[in-house]
Length: 469
Ligand code: GLN
Image (cartoon, rainbow, N blue to C red; front, side, top):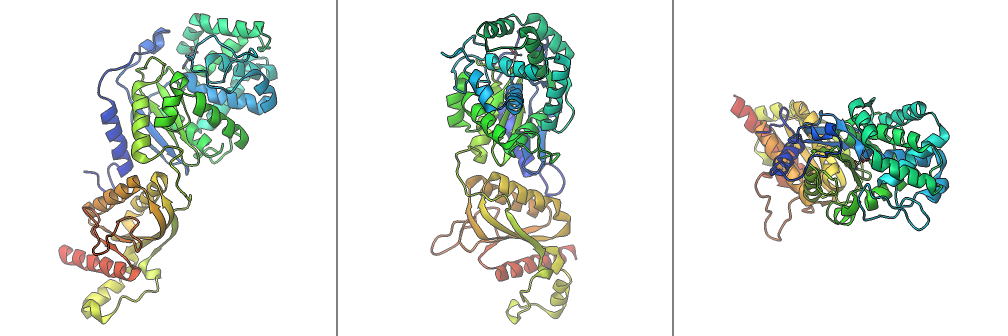
């Protein structure tokens, strides 16, 4: 049973459910072009969600490290854009989806790599950093500092993977030399390959990928550290390219079904971004024929569909969903009316209990992330109240997932000897027919005015007092 104050939250319980549904089957293969990747445990599964305020939900193997591989490509591209400027980068790396495999040896009619998410474009992005700082160690130190700023913690290199990549990188070397022969790669091809393999070999967890995604979702400010890691214009460009090219040949299907800018890597990681709202990190090392994590893709599809995360799921979301937060003691509403049938003792008791009724005044359109932040606040302050009144008077729309989250929360409150009363005059949470209200299971207390809500809250406090003796 998930209780209100201890145990998994609604969101964690839901993420566990995603894990259970996605872990079935053994589809996919481990990457085997180097022995280190073929040796990992195929049953590992990590899933993390970083919210815009820096809160991170993580489940299962969210602390298991794996190499970032191609999830690094948007970051190095961001760094190249930052150092060289858009114009110089655009002359040499295209932004068109290629519909080809990640390691395809291909360029467009101007002999530019088609985009920065395939190896050719990624190696070229790395080489541009060497045009600014030709020493590989120093260029890598700077790259590492940047990646770490995006993740909000110091990342480190997996030197076994790096050495192995360096030994077996014939195809990537071929790409680098080809680009050199076309005159687009101007640094040393060997140095470019070296830097590219180091970036691919950085160890991350799904928490890291979620926070990096959260940084992009936040317009470049890391939600954990509050520090700007990437410029806003660069973020916009990077997210655009991730949207059209991030999932390789599966990009079109990805945009229609998941609808989130994302990047996968052969290490088994996927990072996805819901602009303005959240970052997702998922890990499962079994890969499909495109080199995308099979279960990672499945998890993203489920998350997007269930939580309404598609970026074109248009809602008038306002970041500030809790408009105000106070106790009934601070309200100027008199419930001490004769028609409530209270005895003097009851009235006295209730006067002393008014600060145990918390009122959350909500506003805007409620979709997953807004509702999540309301419910997290409810959970964090649960010791301070017996009854929570959720005032929906200023809420215009509640989506399906948020509605069921409110039902779940009110059920959890009940399990924890507490209660939720919802003030819903326009029927946004509970659709009302002309003749009767139909709150349905889990939402017993739905009323139309704050006055009624307070009376319900007091009834509940009295009932509790009787039960507790
Ligand atoms: N290191 C790998 C390569 O360059 C990364 C590829 C990937 O993750 N898609 O081949």
